[in-house]
Amino acid sequence: MPKVLGGSLEAHRREVRSRVFDVVRAQLYERGFDAITLAGVAAEAGLGRTAMYNHFPDKESLLVAFVEDEAARYVERLRAAVDAEGDPVAQLATFVRLQLRVLAEHHLPPGTALESALAPAAYQRISAHADPIIEQLRSVLLAGVDAGSWPAQDLDVVVPMITAALGSRQVIDVPADQLEDAIEAAVRFVRRAVGSSENH
Image 1 (cartoon, one colour):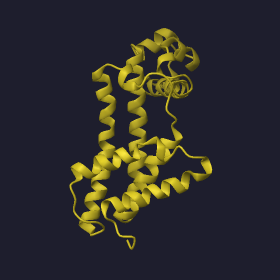
Image 2 (cartoon, helix red, strand yellow; image 1 turned 60 degrees about the horizontal axis):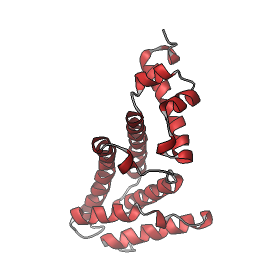
Image 3 (cartoon, one colour; image 1 turned 90 degrees about the vertical axis):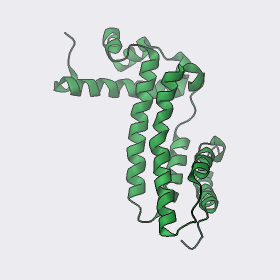
């Protein structure tokens, strides 16, 4: 019977997934999705191939599980940061800053884009993790309308426009010493886009 890490099956499962995801994170951004193999991840994570297959039957299930884990941790971080702010204007600025800082931290992996590397159902599962982020933005914008921080607007139009703007790597593909200025320019842009006055 394989050795159980951490003293219980649940602790073992968490430990294995943590090790594997650390390896996937590094390999994904060094080599790209195309170059990742279950055997290679298992070896670097110190797992036997059989143990690896028990957790992740194929490469696609591994990547989906990895993205789900990363997304869940980011959503928790985003909610905590936004909730720590006292008013919608500060919450919107925090949302914009965190979205762009995380985008700047994660360089695009080389190789095939996720959409073409995964089956449509798997890519849809990954895409669904954007929903809580979009809902967070919607709730901030609604709170701002209620507080009189900006006028009422069609969020079905405004929210996708803001998320598209914040998803552009051109915003943060600047020298490191210019990144914070670029992020603050984006904050001002989004505030103007929703109609927030500079007095708030």
